[in-house]
Length: 252
Image 1 (tube, one colour):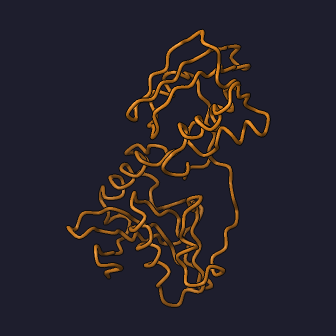
Image 2: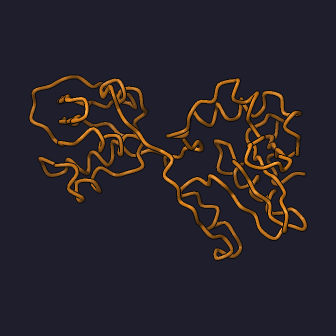
């Protein structure tokens, strides 16, 4: 079935998917803050077959206009007319919408449940009736704890140029470091410095802002981060922002 003018959707059983899901997911996790890698053995043992339910899993695979897979949704049909989507994976919002439209269009289905729904996703705004969609079960599955601050800061991507001096305390490890963070053209350099700090913060708060899900200025207002000069919090907001809201599909 063709959900849009630029692609198509086909339904496969898990055994028919080969390495399609693994390849699509790997592209997704490289662009999604908070996503974890999945080793090949994970796919061989678990993908599309959660042990919590005996229901048959179906895989809706979206292909682009050239026939290349660029997204998938794993779902099952339960009793009482409920269709449950375990995960929807793609790097393209239009493909996500096409897959959502596909599962929402199933006959004899009275309710569609999207598990592991991405925060801040605009799907509810795309419904003909905004009130037909309801958010529930917000779960805290994503925790970040930085052990090597310079290495972590130089590893992530950046969207704004700038320079900040971060004074970071790590009470658990008994460590303290003052770092000069310099961002140019999307890449960062982080080196020790004795300059006066722009921000003082605990390593836990640095973990909160690291993926872009929490604005540093919010933690300044909460009293967790100290800003030592005007404009430091606003610059930190611009530097640490992400292009996608952090999201993790895995519980522990």
